[in-house]
Length: 248
Image (cartoon, rainbow, N blue to C red; front, side):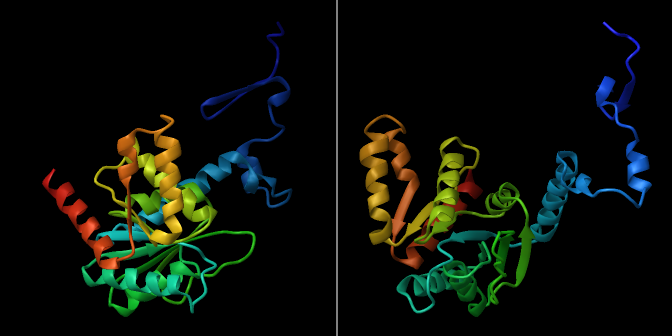
């Protein structure tokens, strides 16, 4: 083995041989010339991720108790689903919950609108997408994220429960992540409510007749899903869970 290979320590790492760079981090930092590839390297991304967590925690730390409402960005304003979103946001705000959404159009806009019109706190947690999507006009507090997993952490950390209205892949992604966290006891007393029985019933049937019956989940896991068409009932479910959590 060649013991004369060049060696350099970089933080907790040790580089040897051809992996030793021609310049130091300080040199590259202070040199105004050269490529900007470093902006897209993984170590720099870690700092971006860290900064997103810090920004999110700092922005949301003083929120009152909140509930996250999910649903399709493609829901038109003149639809029954949009109206349901408005009523959900309104009902939550009337009992003191802040309403958190993804900040976009459709159902997200509807829930933010309902919360704002009821005098509540309306929050939008946006995400950088290939096609620009601005925060809707009914958001009081908006935070934009680059990374989905940071944004998801904020949804869970600052929510007393999730309400899912009809939606697509994004809604399903958030729904099943929430169910996994509850199932594995990563979060406790955390209701997951499906609003719109006609839309969600086929999914609940599949969970019951396929997942549970083939042993992919426990029969009791089916009960993690609560289905209703009544915003007031959804609010009652969340209030009961909060009282249970406070008394635990």
